[in-house]
Image 1: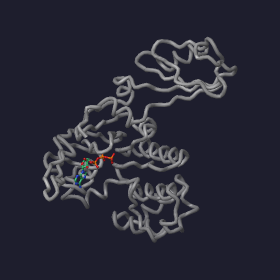
Image 2: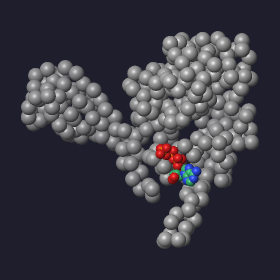
Image 3: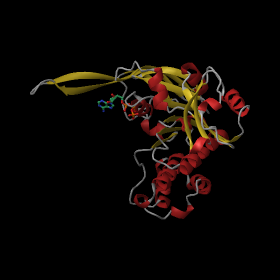
Image 4: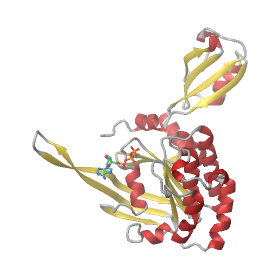
Length: 325
Ligand SMILES: Nc1ncnc2c1ncn2[C@@H]1O[C@H](COP(=O)(O)OP(=O)(O)OP(=O)(O)O)[C@@H](O)[C@H]1O
């Protein structure tokens, strides 16, 4: 059975706008339009789109916070709004921008409350907590009130809290927002481990392409409330031919870009560090990263290189610049 099944799921909002000095006009915002979505157990799905595209509204409907205007949805076999309590025992939710922990309590006092709320026996949540504390390195700040934790520490606590009851589906809204690179990577590693080891299904929204690349094979792009793309991330990038950037450091400087001929599809976008560092943008439909590196290596020795993917906002804007927002 699918873990998420949405059929023609839609949500409208009525908003009032100023129409002249004393008049207000009612307008309907179609935040989510006829979304059809099936997510199978164990999948990791990235849900991406520009600001205001409808991601959070969809998540709120999936978690039972918002009533759909029309269409139907089941999550873990439950109708989210009327069966919200049952659903809460089966899913974990993490909002990067909002804490779900008790601000004045230390983490160690929150876990017994969560265990009781989810009706998980102590004999089950205790060993699970020991495992989470070890794997997410929570030990050094378990006794600190949540409000005194750093953002990275708090997010680890949030994720541990959301996963204490071993939910089969974890929904994460911008889980890595504001985190430094090390905290982002350890969070991604942990989530990936959970999925591989326990078959946990992941659905996440993010503006960080690396989250998707690291965690999700499938990506959904939402544009103006509707699903505009559903498939592999590689297919999305190839479809658009979004330009990627390769930064190469050479062993010997090459000052003039003409001294480093590039294949068709690649162009120099800058030379730095007295000719050592070359920034090259390329269209992966025309030339692969491997072919580009081979071409560069045939004229100069490469000491180091890094690849930069286009950010999600850029990719989505390129793809669906037609958005009415
Ligand atoms: N409570 C509300 N009342 C009125 N309009 C709303 C409400 N919530 C969302 N909207 C509108 O619905 C649309 C979709 O918003 P939503 O928050 O789902 O977008 P999003 O994709 O999550 O954006 P972001 O990436 O900025 O978080 C926007 O136009 C937003 O202004």
